[in-house]
Length: 375
Image (cartoon, rainbow, N blue to C red; front, side):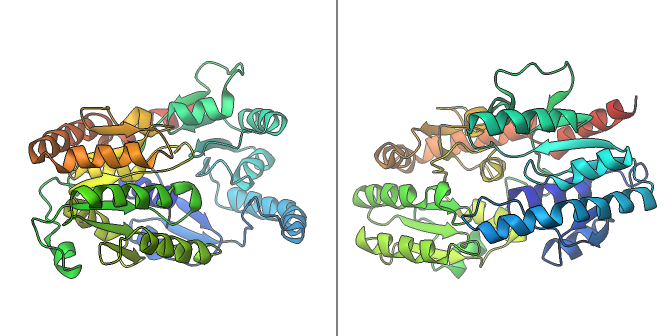
């Protein structure tokens, strides 16, 4: 599951079921299904091809050929179940918007991505998003600018809504002892973590090069890469393992794959000394950053996109130039050399999450958006 999937689950879990009756439409079975049902949500399946930028002409033609039949099927579900609002959970899921338009239903488009900077195509897409939506929700200013920069947008049409965490569960006193014990890493050993799927734009190579810099200054430091390769990127994972070996990190970095899942991530974050974020393209939000900060862990993040809004440089962590492994490594070293600074930034990060990124704040703001649609 990616960040948008986890965010969707947390949204459904937190909705007041006396006011809302959520149905989630998925393309097939998977790890979300039982969790969504357990959260009081009805789940339906409908085969939906994903919009993907693959250099595969056959795939693109099949997507186009199946698009309108899929839209019509969704419109029938909307009409059958008397759906009042369609909430599309990704900028790149086009079916919901057109199905809502076809059935005359209100539509909220939740923009969780920064679109590719293709001038003409982006302008057409941006106008389409506005035309087919009652409201557009953007996770960050980076998402808004990435989609609508330079465009005239009607007042109140596009509203910000950052994801949140249930801070009753995401407590800062949770121990990471189990994770360290399972990984044979002692409690006093400096541990730096990379928590993300192994997609090339997440910048794992930058993390590994920064880890090599840290390792030269802190010989006992250890590193974990928590997350596996999405389908089609298995060769990239092997390439990164080879890079770690070439950098002299054998025995110092552990590739955990999908060993730890959503329910383990709080303990994973709590096990870390510092959380490292090294995306080489602007991150739309940065869910792992608020998760680490909720666990009172300092972060070192790439200064582009969402992290610029989440991380207060010098207070809750450090921001470094995207792709600059040397600067990233130096920032990690500065934190690892000063345990008091780690604790200070960890506390500041926790306070920032409590103020800005709690699920209570998220749901209150979402309620206002939903209510505004029907006024």
